[in-house]
Length: 84
Image 1 (tube, rainbow, N blue to C red):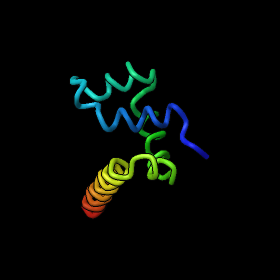
Image 2: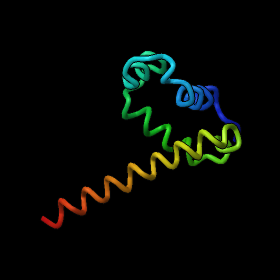
Image 3: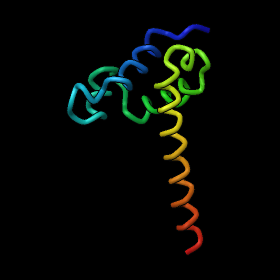
């Protein structure tokens, strides 16, 4: 299924949000009228969509790497906490 306008807007935002300045969470609320947690849920699903990868391969791969690194750091922190 082709990407929706919102999906393309999410990818464009992720590619350019630093240019807008300010806090990203504020920009998410202003741009998409979404809570940041909901935005990140939707973005996470979008990153697994082959259409997103076809649309902007470099961006999607970079965002996937960042997501995977954050998940690994989270697992590591949980592991340290559980062993105490």
